[in-house]
Image 1 (spheres, helix red, strand yellow):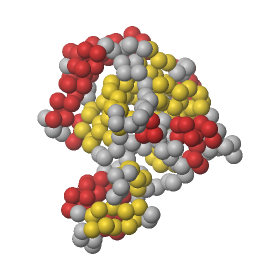
Image 2 (image 1 turned 45 degrees about the vertical axis):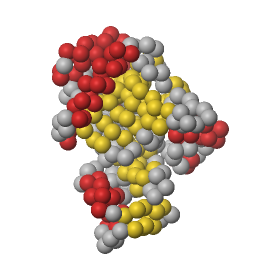
Image 3 (image 1 turned 180 degrees about the vertical axis):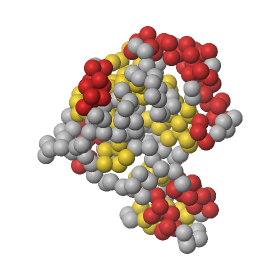
Image 4 (image 1 turned 90 degrees about the vertical axis):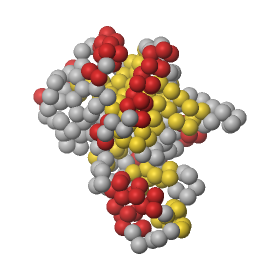
Length: 300
């Protein structure tokens, strides 16, 4: 794998790297309530496309720390734990995920950035209380590091027009190229449509949604360059955590830490670390919401 960052930048990045970190009870219930109400109110005000990305699998609401005194104090509180940081190429946000995040790395797109820490603060977990059991979600951090640009790591590569959408059975499906689906349904009026081994209900609303998705491009590149050897991923770990994506995508990877989600905790790891969500759906989690941001040590 050719490095996106120069050797000089990589050396500077490595000097900031450390172990996975978690601090329990970082935010209290009142602070969580204030944060969620403030940011979700931004969504309800339709503050603009740059502030909101709303898709079937997830909703992101972006913000700036300078928007309010509460957010300014929140930044200071985080810096008390991890040191001074900057946020450069991807705004801080809260993200509600309804489909587990797959293998990826948040290294950004700027080769001159001294990338620092991923910061995640769980804010809300919604369970399916009608089920017999439910367990908190986890974030899976791998020992493997990545010094290329931000990427979704999979053997099913494409040109960054991949999206997760729901099929006729209300199950999430990975569409590798949304433009191909858009073209296939162009002349379909209404009814059931088969796309590979998946089926979708075609109507005006569905066509409009696919058309809107086709006008955007995913932030992460889609690549399989993380696979650097023939080492198989541990099957028991795959069955426990990773069944939301193909087993072959996990080749070469080795788990370092499993961080269980506790609402109000602060979780950080190096931005060079490959990571993903566990398959929280099998543990009857309907959705989870967290504050997330990608920090840097320099201002670019």
